[in-house]
Amino acid sequence: MLTMMTRRGFFGSAAGTAGLTAMFGTLPLLGAMANGQTDAAPLRPVGGGRPKGIRVGMLTAPFGDRPLVEVLEFARKAGIACLEAVADPGSKHIDPGTFDAAKAEEVKRMLAERNLEISGLACFGNPCQPGGAESFQNHARKMADAAVLLGVPTLCMQSGMPLPNMSRIQQIRQVVPKVYAPIIAYAKDRGIKIAIENWFETCLQGIDTFECLMETIKDDNFGLNYDPSHLVHQQCDHLLPVSLFAKRIFHTHAKDTFIDTALRARVGIYGHGWWRYVIPGSGSIHWGEYINCLRTNGYQGVLSIEHEDGSLSRENGFILAAKHLAQFC
Image (cartoon, rainbow, N blue to C red):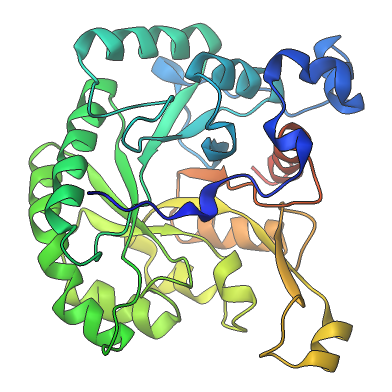
Protein backbone atom coordinates (compact mmCIF):
# COMPACT_ATOMS: atom_id res chain seq x y z
CA MET A 1 0.00 0.00 0.00
CA LEU A 2 1.30 3.46 -0.92
CA THR A 3 2.08 5.44 2.23
CA MET A 4 1.48 9.16 1.84
CA MET A 5 3.48 11.95 3.47
CA THR A 6 0.93 14.22 5.08
CA ARG A 7 2.70 17.59 5.52
CA ARG A 8 1.28 18.63 2.13
CA GLY A 9 -2.09 19.51 3.64
CA PHE A 10 -2.90 23.15 4.19
CA PHE A 11 -1.58 24.35 7.55
CA GLY A 12 -3.94 27.30 7.92
CA SER A 13 -7.11 27.56 9.97
CA ALA A 14 -10.76 27.74 8.94
CA ALA A 15 -10.08 29.69 5.76
CA GLY A 16 -7.98 26.81 4.49
CA THR A 17 -10.99 24.50 4.43
CA ALA A 18 -13.60 26.96 3.23
CA GLY A 19 -15.23 26.21 -0.10
CA LEU A 20 -14.31 28.21 -3.17
CA THR A 21 -17.95 29.14 -3.69
CA ALA A 22 -17.78 31.71 -0.91
CA MET A 23 -14.25 32.93 -1.29
CA PHE A 24 -14.84 36.04 -3.38
CA GLY A 25 -17.18 37.52 -0.79
CA THR A 26 -15.15 36.68 2.29
CA LEU A 27 -11.65 37.94 1.60
CA PRO A 28 -11.07 41.63 0.75
CA LEU A 29 -8.42 40.99 -1.88
CA LEU A 30 -10.42 38.21 -3.46
CA GLY A 31 -13.58 40.27 -3.37
CA ALA A 32 -11.82 42.96 -5.35
CA MET A 33 -10.48 40.34 -7.72
CA ALA A 34 -13.96 39.00 -8.41
CA ASN A 35 -15.10 42.52 -9.33
CA GLY A 36 -12.26 42.97 -11.80
CA GLN A 37 -10.28 45.28 -9.51
CA THR A 38 -7.28 43.03 -8.86
CA ASP A 39 -3.78 44.06 -9.87
CA ALA A 40 -2.61 40.45 -9.79
CA ALA A 41 -0.05 39.54 -12.44
CA PRO A 42 -1.69 38.88 -15.82
CA LEU A 43 -1.54 35.42 -17.29
CA ARG A 44 1.23 34.72 -19.72
CA PRO A 45 0.26 32.94 -22.92
CA VAL A 46 0.55 29.18 -22.69
CA GLY A 47 -0.46 26.24 -24.84
CA GLY A 48 0.51 26.77 -28.46
CA GLY A 49 1.96 30.19 -27.61
CA ARG A 50 3.77 29.05 -24.48
CA PRO A 51 6.77 31.28 -23.77
CA LYS A 52 10.23 30.03 -22.91
CA GLY A 53 10.89 31.51 -19.52
CA ILE A 54 10.31 31.33 -15.81
CA ARG A 55 6.64 31.55 -14.86
CA VAL A 56 4.50 31.22 -11.75
CA GLY A 57 2.64 28.06 -10.82
CA MET A 58 1.09 26.42 -7.78
CA LEU A 59 1.04 23.05 -6.06
CA THR A 60 -2.65 22.18 -5.78
CA ALA A 61 -2.40 20.26 -2.46
CA PRO A 62 -4.15 22.90 -0.30
CA PHE A 63 -7.20 22.55 -2.56
CA GLY A 64 -7.29 18.78 -2.16
CA ASP A 65 -10.93 18.88 -1.08
CA ARG A 66 -12.04 20.72 -4.24
CA PRO A 67 -12.52 19.39 -7.79
CA LEU A 68 -9.96 20.30 -10.42
CA VAL A 69 -12.25 22.65 -12.32
CA GLU A 70 -12.57 24.90 -9.25
CA VAL A 71 -8.82 24.96 -8.76
CA LEU A 72 -8.31 25.89 -12.39
CA GLU A 73 -10.82 28.71 -12.11
CA PHE A 74 -9.07 30.00 -9.00
CA ALA A 75 -5.67 29.88 -10.75
CA ARG A 76 -7.06 31.78 -13.72
CA LYS A 77 -8.46 34.56 -11.57
CA ALA A 78 -5.29 34.70 -9.45
CA GLY A 79 -3.03 35.11 -12.47
CA ILE A 80 -1.27 31.77 -11.89
CA ALA A 81 -0.42 30.14 -15.22
CA CYS A 82 0.69 26.64 -14.20
CA LEU A 83 -0.43 23.88 -11.87
CA GLU A 84 1.58 21.16 -10.19
CA ALA A 85 -1.41 18.87 -9.90
CA VAL A 86 -1.68 16.39 -7.04
CA ALA A 87 -1.85 12.87 -8.48
CA ASP A 88 -2.14 10.72 -5.36
CA PRO A 89 -4.31 7.60 -5.45
CA GLY A 90 -7.90 8.86 -5.38
CA SER A 91 -6.94 12.52 -5.92
CA LYS A 92 -9.75 14.89 -6.94
CA HIS A 93 -7.31 16.62 -9.27
CA ILE A 94 -5.66 13.84 -11.27
CA ASP A 95 -6.20 10.23 -10.19
CA PRO A 96 -3.81 8.10 -12.26
CA GLY A 97 -5.57 4.91 -11.21
CA THR A 98 -8.74 5.85 -13.08
CA PHE A 99 -7.32 8.22 -15.69
CA ASP A 100 -7.90 7.54 -19.37
CA ALA A 101 -7.86 9.27 -22.75
CA ALA A 102 -11.39 10.66 -22.36
CA LYS A 103 -10.55 12.26 -19.00
CA ALA A 104 -7.32 13.62 -20.45
CA GLU A 105 -9.22 15.34 -23.26
CA GLU A 106 -11.61 16.88 -20.74
CA VAL A 107 -8.74 18.18 -18.60
CA LYS A 108 -6.95 19.60 -21.65
CA ARG A 109 -10.17 21.33 -22.70
CA MET A 110 -10.56 22.93 -19.25
CA LEU A 111 -6.93 24.06 -19.34
CA ALA A 112 -7.20 25.52 -22.84
CA GLU A 113 -10.36 27.45 -21.95
CA ARG A 114 -8.46 29.17 -19.13
CA ASN A 115 -5.09 29.47 -20.87
CA LEU A 116 -3.40 27.29 -18.22
CA GLU A 117 -0.94 24.42 -18.23
CA ILE A 118 -0.01 21.57 -15.90
CA SER A 119 3.72 21.72 -15.14
CA GLY A 120 3.92 18.44 -13.26
CA LEU A 121 1.98 15.61 -11.64
CA ALA A 122 2.83 15.31 -7.96
CA CYS A 123 2.75 12.38 -5.57
CA PHE A 124 4.78 12.58 -2.40
CA GLY A 125 4.40 9.03 -1.21
CA ASN A 126 7.20 7.26 0.65
CA PRO A 127 9.03 5.06 -1.88
CA CYS A 128 11.28 3.61 0.82
CA GLN A 129 8.46 2.38 3.04
CA PRO A 130 9.39 -1.23 3.92
CA GLY A 131 7.26 -3.49 1.76
CA GLY A 132 5.84 -0.54 -0.16
CA ALA A 133 8.21 -0.23 -3.13
CA GLU A 134 6.09 -2.25 -5.55
CA SER A 135 2.95 -0.24 -4.78
CA PHE A 136 4.86 3.01 -5.25
CA GLN A 137 6.35 1.81 -8.54
CA ASN A 138 2.96 0.72 -9.88
CA HIS A 139 1.44 4.09 -9.05
CA ALA A 140 4.40 5.93 -10.59
CA ARG A 141 3.89 4.04 -13.86
CA LYS A 142 0.25 5.10 -13.90
CA MET A 143 1.37 8.68 -13.27
CA ALA A 144 3.71 8.48 -16.26
CA ASP A 145 0.87 7.18 -18.43
CA ALA A 146 -1.37 10.03 -17.29
CA ALA A 147 1.43 12.52 -17.99
CA VAL A 148 1.76 11.23 -21.55
CA LEU A 149 -1.98 11.60 -22.14
CA LEU A 150 -1.88 15.17 -20.82
CA GLY A 151 1.41 16.22 -22.41
CA VAL A 152 2.88 16.92 -18.95
CA PRO A 153 6.70 16.70 -18.88
CA THR A 154 7.45 16.00 -15.23
CA LEU A 155 6.54 13.76 -12.30
CA CYS A 156 7.24 15.34 -8.89
CA MET A 157 8.15 12.88 -6.12
CA GLN A 158 10.38 12.41 -3.08
CA SER A 159 13.38 10.27 -2.21
CA GLY A 160 11.87 8.53 0.82
CA MET A 161 11.82 8.82 4.59
CA PRO A 162 14.97 7.80 6.51
CA LEU A 163 15.26 4.13 7.33
CA PRO A 164 16.38 2.87 10.76
CA ASN A 165 20.00 1.79 11.23
CA MET A 166 21.05 3.43 8.00
CA SER A 167 22.54 6.85 7.29
CA ARG A 168 20.98 9.07 4.65
CA ILE A 169 23.98 8.58 2.39
CA GLN A 170 23.76 4.80 2.76
CA GLN A 171 20.06 4.88 1.94
CA ILE A 172 20.65 7.00 -1.15
CA ARG A 173 23.32 4.63 -2.39
CA GLN A 174 21.74 1.31 -1.48
CA VAL A 175 17.94 1.69 -1.42
CA VAL A 176 16.77 4.66 -3.49
CA PRO A 177 18.34 3.46 -6.79
CA LYS A 178 16.64 0.07 -6.52
CA VAL A 179 13.25 1.64 -5.91
CA TYR A 180 13.57 4.22 -8.66
CA ALA A 181 15.33 2.21 -11.39
CA PRO A 182 12.13 0.77 -12.96
CA ILE A 183 10.33 4.12 -12.61
CA ILE A 184 13.14 6.03 -14.31
CA ALA A 185 13.29 3.52 -17.16
CA TYR A 186 9.51 3.54 -17.67
CA ALA A 187 9.39 7.34 -17.64
CA LYS A 188 12.39 7.70 -19.95
CA ASP A 189 10.75 5.51 -22.58
CA ARG A 190 7.84 7.95 -22.56
CA GLY A 191 9.83 11.17 -22.53
CA ILE A 192 8.95 11.98 -18.92
CA LYS A 193 11.30 13.43 -16.28
CA ILE A 194 11.38 12.56 -12.57
CA ALA A 195 11.88 15.54 -10.22
CA ILE A 196 12.68 14.79 -6.56
CA GLU A 197 11.92 17.38 -3.90
CA ASN A 198 14.57 17.97 -1.24
CA TRP A 199 12.29 17.94 1.81
CA PHE A 200 14.75 17.95 4.69
CA GLU A 201 12.92 15.22 6.62
CA THR A 202 13.51 12.72 3.80
CA CYS A 203 16.90 11.19 3.10
CA LEU A 204 17.61 14.16 0.80
CA GLN A 205 18.68 16.77 3.33
CA GLY A 206 21.95 18.71 3.00
CA ILE A 207 23.77 19.53 -0.23
CA ASP A 208 26.06 16.54 0.37
CA THR A 209 23.02 14.27 -0.04
CA PHE A 210 22.09 16.07 -3.27
CA GLU A 211 25.57 15.34 -4.61
CA CYS A 212 25.33 11.70 -3.55
CA LEU A 213 21.93 11.27 -5.23
CA MET A 214 23.02 12.85 -8.52
CA GLU A 215 26.26 10.82 -8.57
CA THR A 216 24.47 7.58 -7.71
CA ILE A 217 21.61 7.96 -10.20
CA LYS A 218 23.05 9.46 -13.36
CA ASP A 219 20.04 9.15 -15.66
CA ASP A 220 19.44 12.42 -17.48
CA ASN A 221 15.68 12.27 -16.86
CA PHE A 222 16.18 12.06 -13.07
CA GLY A 223 16.71 15.31 -11.19
CA LEU A 224 15.31 17.79 -8.71
CA ASN A 225 12.09 19.56 -7.88
CA TYR A 226 14.23 22.07 -6.04
CA ASP A 227 12.86 23.82 -2.95
CA PRO A 228 15.28 26.41 -1.52
CA SER A 229 13.26 26.89 1.68
CA HIS A 230 14.42 23.55 3.09
CA LEU A 231 18.04 24.69 3.05
CA VAL A 232 17.46 28.06 4.71
CA HIS A 233 16.73 26.79 8.22
CA GLN A 234 19.56 24.26 7.87
CA GLN A 235 21.87 27.25 7.30
CA CYS A 236 22.96 25.78 3.95
CA ASP A 237 23.62 27.89 0.84
CA HIS A 238 20.29 27.77 -0.97
CA LEU A 239 21.76 29.27 -4.15
CA LEU A 240 24.60 26.76 -4.51
CA PRO A 241 22.47 23.81 -5.76
CA VAL A 242 21.19 25.94 -8.64
CA SER A 243 24.66 26.11 -10.16
CA LEU A 244 25.83 22.68 -9.00
CA PHE A 245 22.86 20.85 -10.51
CA ALA A 246 21.75 23.31 -13.20
CA LYS A 247 21.07 20.65 -15.83
CA ARG A 248 19.12 18.47 -13.42
CA ILE A 249 16.69 20.97 -11.92
CA PHE A 250 13.48 20.17 -13.77
CA HIS A 251 10.93 21.88 -11.51
CA THR A 252 11.03 24.22 -8.52
CA HIS A 253 8.95 24.91 -5.45
CA ALA A 254 8.45 28.52 -4.40
CA LYS A 255 8.26 28.59 -0.62
CA ASP A 256 10.06 30.82 1.88
CA THR A 257 11.32 30.38 5.44
CA PHE A 258 10.90 32.90 8.23
CA ILE A 259 13.68 32.88 10.85
CA ASP A 260 12.96 34.33 14.29
CA THR A 261 16.55 35.19 15.17
CA ALA A 262 15.71 36.45 18.66
CA LEU A 263 13.96 33.21 19.58
CA ARG A 264 16.74 31.14 18.03
CA ALA A 265 19.29 33.01 20.14
CA ARG A 266 17.24 32.11 23.21
CA VAL A 267 16.33 28.45 22.55
CA GLY A 268 19.22 27.46 20.29
CA ILE A 269 19.15 25.69 16.95
CA TYR A 270 17.86 22.50 18.59
CA GLY A 271 14.91 24.37 20.09
CA HIS A 272 11.49 24.69 18.51
CA GLY A 273 9.46 27.46 16.95
CA TRP A 274 12.28 29.69 15.69
CA TRP A 275 11.57 28.98 12.00
CA ARG A 276 8.50 28.29 9.93
CA TYR A 277 7.49 28.11 6.27
CA VAL A 278 5.89 31.21 4.74
CA ILE A 279 4.91 32.40 1.28
CA PRO A 280 7.55 33.98 -0.97
CA GLY A 281 8.20 37.53 0.13
CA SER A 282 7.59 36.89 3.82
CA GLY A 283 10.84 35.15 4.72
CA SER A 284 14.60 35.12 4.25
CA ILE A 285 14.94 34.36 0.54
CA HIS A 286 15.57 37.26 -1.84
CA TRP A 287 13.43 36.06 -4.72
CA GLY A 288 14.84 38.43 -7.30
CA GLU A 289 18.31 37.09 -6.55
CA TYR A 290 17.14 33.47 -6.54
CA ILE A 291 15.19 33.77 -9.79
CA ASN A 292 18.08 35.55 -11.46
CA CYS A 293 20.33 32.70 -10.34
CA LEU A 294 17.92 30.18 -11.88
CA ARG A 295 17.73 32.14 -15.11
CA THR A 296 21.51 32.60 -15.33
CA ASN A 297 21.94 28.85 -14.97
CA GLY A 298 19.51 28.10 -17.78
CA TYR A 299 16.31 27.27 -15.93
CA GLN A 300 13.26 27.97 -18.09
CA GLY A 301 10.52 26.38 -16.01
CA VAL A 302 7.97 26.95 -13.30
CA LEU A 303 8.08 28.48 -9.81
CA SER A 304 5.43 26.31 -8.18
CA ILE A 305 4.08 28.02 -5.07
CA GLU A 306 3.88 25.54 -2.19
CA HIS A 307 1.59 27.26 0.29
CA GLU A 308 2.34 26.11 3.85
CA ASP A 309 1.98 29.50 5.53
CA GLY A 310 -0.47 29.08 8.39
CA SER A 311 -0.78 32.85 8.90
CA LEU A 312 -2.65 33.30 5.62
CA SER A 313 -5.79 31.82 4.13
CA ARG A 314 -5.48 29.28 1.37
CA GLU A 315 -6.62 31.65 -1.35
CA ASN A 316 -5.00 34.89 -0.23
CA GLY A 317 -1.67 33.16 0.36
CA PHE A 318 -1.48 31.99 -3.24
CA ILE A 319 -2.52 35.39 -4.60
CA LEU A 320 0.02 37.33 -2.56
CA ALA A 321 2.79 34.85 -3.36
CA ALA A 322 2.03 34.98 -7.08
CA LYS A 323 2.03 38.76 -7.08
CA HIS A 324 5.42 38.86 -5.33
CA LEU A 325 7.02 36.34 -7.69
CA ALA A 326 5.58 37.83 -10.87
CA GLN A 327 7.63 41.01 -10.53
CA PHE A 328 10.80 38.97 -11.11
CA CYS A 329 9.50 36.78 -13.97
